[in-house]
Length: 63
Image (cartoon, rainbow, N blue to C red; front, side, top):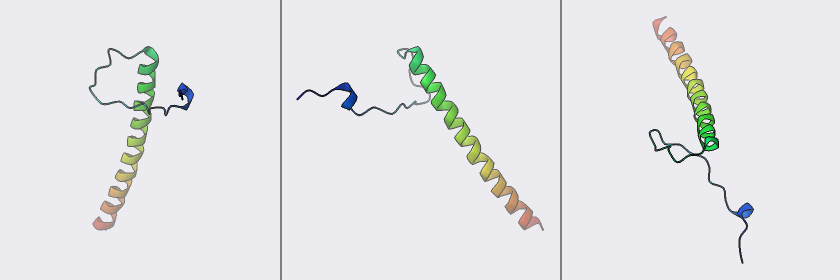
């Protein structure tokens, strides 16, 4: 039985830093940029939380 493309599992878009992008389409590059922007936002949120925890610990131990 033939399988339709709609039934095939879709690969999640991923990006490896430094990978060859010469064969990607404009849409694929735009998708990668969106993915990387989301990851930057996630990292910045985590960084803010870690800094807040560190600052709270510093204030606690300096008092």
